[in-house]
Length: 119
Image (cartoon, rainbow, N blue to C red):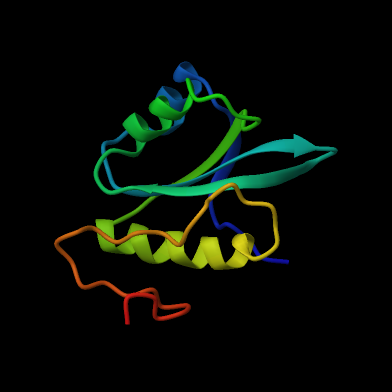
């Protein structure tokens, strides 16, 4: 079974996000819920600059996602590449609500390492 390679799960709340995402950085996240003892991934995402701010914005969206996992990244490109890997590991017939492949930043020529999207 695939692994997200992220910290968590944590309750998706302002206090918990501030407690665990303590530095401003690019990063990756997964949103979901807990069934029995398993974290069920419903959405894969990334932040190119401020992971805390992106997670805070998700609190107010109507969703069944009440938990999150996260991992800070060294760069926007590293976050994009991890988002692509997680998308492919959890997206194909796994019930993600992501409607399309992760998008690269407009001013880049990055390619998905899993499928060469943008190749």
